[in-house]
Image (tube, rainbow, N blue to C red):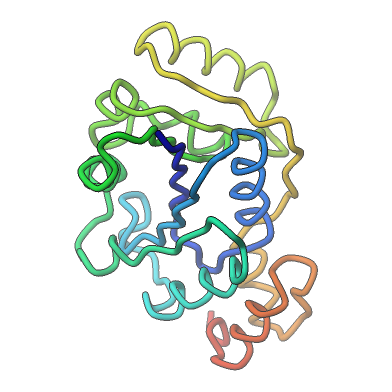
Amino acid sequence: MNKIGVLGGTFDPIHNGHVALGLAAMEEVGLDKLIVMPAHIQPFKQHRKIAQDEHRLAMARLAFEGREGVEVSDFEMTKGDISYSYDTMSYLRTIYPYDDLYFVMGTDSFLKVDRWYKGEDLLEEFSFIVSSRPGYPEKVLESKIRFIAEDYGTEIIRLRTKMPEISSTEIRDAALFGESISHLVPRAVEEYIYKNGLYDED
């Protein structure tokens, strides 16, 4: 039985924080595989303009290029429509019926997960790997973990690796003005962003 982590997101663009989260999950939990899953349309970002699927998928592949055990999936993009995490995890369950599936996420997402589409089903049926995120009080996260574990019986693994404080919004803003983003994204991703002019327009 393998341990498989699923790291989803809009990834517009993918950045060093996403990479750090995925790699920390692999190392601390001993994942056999990490599936990076760029969303087609995230439920909470339906009306926001985002980079095209092909670009976000390409950046995700560049960010994890050469990382053993990491697979970047186009499932949600190929499927189309709104990308609901429960539907994706349920699909992966059919592909990996005998393996342990873990949903990998940061504090900001975890604090709201029970209010997602079929969030309670997600919590009852799958395990979670959660990292701390700068700006969120530790006590708030610990309290939420206890509540979720007691109410839903969810297995929740807390990562201890410190995550960098980065947001995709600050990267897009910096790219708009042609500023260096080399400290925020992998080098190959920075080159891709500027080569394709992804965030040249506000």
